[in-house]
Amino acid sequence: MAVYTYSNIIQLMETPGTKLHSEWSSKPAPDIAKVYWRMDDNAMFVDVIKQIAVDESNHRDVNHTFAEMAWHDVNPYVHKHIQDAGKAYDYWKSKTTAVEGRDLDYLMNEKPEPKPEPKPQS
Image (cartoon, rainbow, N blue to C red; front, side):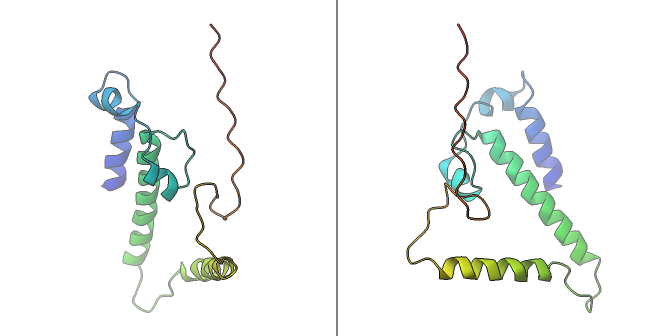
């Protein structure tokens, strides 16, 4: 239900003439969302809602997978998480200070500089 709800919100935010479009379409993404999801500085609120919808679809898929498993089935996600945990441990072990994630991608590599927006011609 959450994926459907967020998809509906996105559609309304992107449809001119709707209240959600007029109220939310020009709002920038909050800084906390930009940092949490490592979004571009020019991200908009609709981009946040899209990210939330993606997260919810992942939760839906994981929950449905577990709901269909028997108690003795092997967790199909353990292998990926073990690999990720090992990489995360190695990364954080190499750090001696806090790390600001805003300029890093999901693999903790520096994000390339954003390309400047083309200026409209008058």
